Image (cartoon, rainbow, N blue to C red; front, side, top):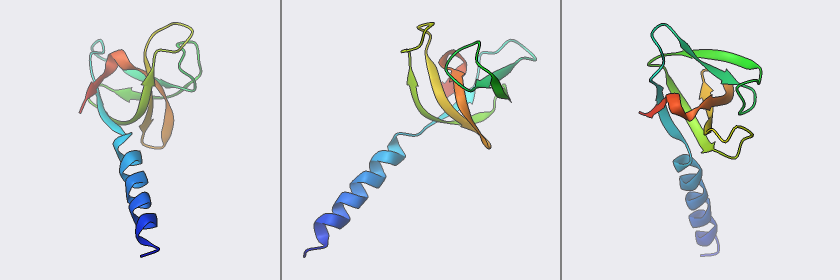
Length: 92
């Protein structure tokens, strides 16, 4: 009986963190263009990598609390973890 509340708590924490992830597909880019994954949510930030149109990305939340007031999402593309413009991310 002592362990039951601890088990319930662990299950609830795990379920909450899993639901925080989103799946996206890169969409809406001009033909032949790629989506830059940046170090910070800013168009002037260093590009860590590129994702082609149609690529699947994992998302970890979005924010418009940026200097440009544009919405950026924290994403993971393969081993690259960075920020991408929400405008080019469609729900997958």
